[in-house]
Image 1 (cartoon, rainbow, N blue to C red):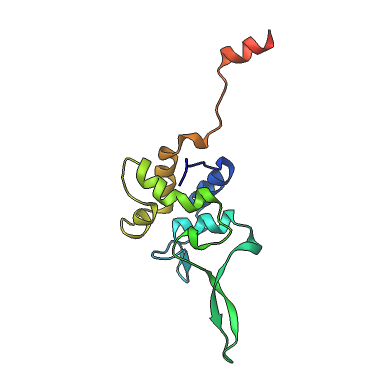
Image 2 (cartoon, rainbow, N blue to C red; image 1 turned 90 degrees about the vertical axis):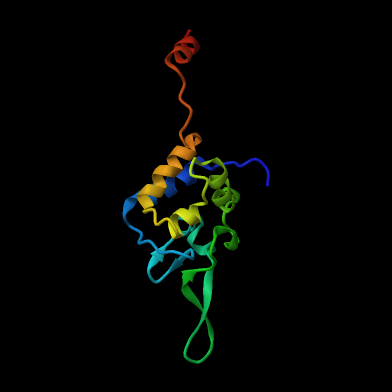
Length: 142
């Protein structure tokens, strides 16, 4: 794993989704009948709809069909997950003051999505665009 590179736009979209109240929360998997884990929400809002991978299911005749649930326990099991999303569970554990994976906060510590969004904001200050100081802007105008 090289240097972690966050996609600011996708990351902020994920934070908004976590805080939106639109998604119910579950544990132990990206998503199930109860809802999504925090990383499942990221997959749902970041990976293009047509590229999301779902668990396999079978109809009454035994024919394979697509389940309504995302495949996998973590984003690395989603073929089209961006690299930063594949790496963020471990990266967060290494950089956060909590020294825990996001999956642990979601599944074992029972953090709400809003609480997870807050600790993500603290751990990833680079999610904000760098602002030029007023002095630099004034110098450029001269």
